Length: 140
Image (cartoon, rainbow, N blue to C red; front, side, top):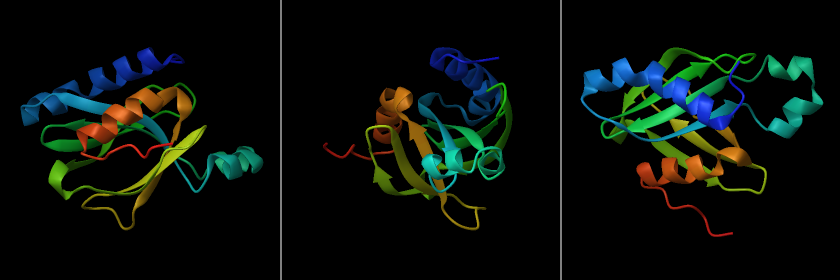
């Protein structure tokens, strides 16, 4: 089971390697995130709240953005759920907060924007991810 940030990142990048090589690029940023309205609310709902969240590793290359599904129990990578051209992905509501930062992403094939929550241990990765997409981190 992957618990450490470096291990999770390494396993996700290894799982993405074949798809990234097909596009002829390299990963310039990536972050581990969960979906859902608020991690605080989902925590209050307990086990029931866990059914409403999905875990992703979102990676940015020079040409594409990949949404790699992660296993909720082991943090191991699953399958690529979305892959979209980088220019077609829109990021809105970027909020950098003390514990849980969040942003919304909209990619072709999605019905509505996907809210992604990022824990503070991934803050450095979130900053690289944001800069890879051309988003300036809000000043705190």
